[in-house]
Image 1 (cartoon, rainbow, N blue to C red):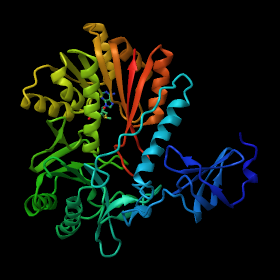
Image 2 (image 1 turned 90 degrees about the horizontal axis):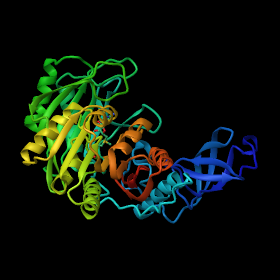
Image 3 (image 1 turned 45 degrees about the vertical axis):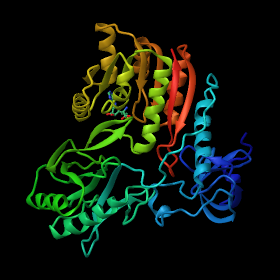
Image 4 (image 1 turned 30 degrees about the horizontal axis):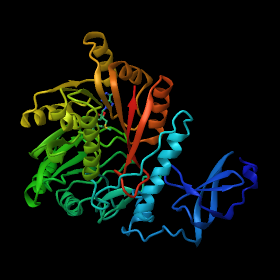
Length: 459
Ligand SMILES: C[S@@+](CC[C@H](N)C(=O)[O-])C[C@H]1O[C@@H](n2cnc3c(N)ncnc32)[C@H](O)[C@@H]1O
């Protein structure tokens, strides 16, 4: 309980870090008043400077580590502090997993009706070079007009020019360095976000862990192709090894969205291939695909094993399906899979993969999941043995959960990358009479505070 007010908290003080917040900050408490400390590890004793104070909490920066947590390690990336992408890289990996389990426990057990035990987090098979999708914003230096590409510093739009990133496949560093130099040689400028001027806004790479080939997409501040861009795309395709394709995405809007509506493939193919559960998938520019294929394989096998151990020839609904990865992985143990996804490119690729693999029992729907559920209830009246829900971070709407309940007679398997929205949606489902059988976290995003979960729900 908080027994002090914000004015009692001094500007500088020494605190013990008790635990990690869901956004990766160390949490310290002073007589119940919460202080979120950037870059702190549970077990640290640190001297901090407190920033803006709110009624119940404040944020703070470390001035000095008085005594370090035994779980602190040397980050393996020299840019860890400046880059901001791997918030937890200074914490021992096994301890990161424990902290992520606590994050899930805190979110789920804050709902009093749910006391389901949270299982230990299944580690990522790869903790370096695991990222399959790389999206670097691009800028240029003021005077020499050198092209810069990297990540933004935490909570800013200040670009850090990243020459080496141990989280992505090694060859991606070379692709990006090649583009920095070749773009300048071709007379292509880096984007100026403030003035909304310049050519190249982002470099997006899809790097296959299965074939080691890449799809490179140049996101430009233009609505149509220009000659220099064709030259750059051709150089990337012909002068680098293992490039599956080069595309251009047109994004002339003043927006924070990385990709615009239209992508054109200028060289090679518009997809790469990845392998999950022994099936080969095609992944395009706008296709959702789990960012860490080796960890994703663990989740897909977990879901497949669960269904095969608990159902015989089930009717499966794969909702928020992307390229129908779950549906395709379970198609040989299911009577039929019905899949729904709103992004057309993903559905087109799913159709290709299904045909190439000779799969005959998948029905694809390219539409909004909520609208599909409603239509399905009104027209077909089918009841599914298993419904897989894998929505974006914001989770499901109440209407979609209501529909999913009406459409399911066995289990809902809810895959989530956001413990907070998972907890909210599980609360809603338990209020409707469901029971949460199990929750299994997976580490899809080593060295970040993110954690993926598979929850099995009895309807
Ligand atoms: C977290 S991804 C999961 C994709 C897939 N299950 C996988 O693991 O590869 C969420 C997917 O839901 C799709 N999506 C988002 N909102 C949707 C909606 N309202 N209706 C249908 N699909 C939606 C996105 O395009 C994305 O492909």
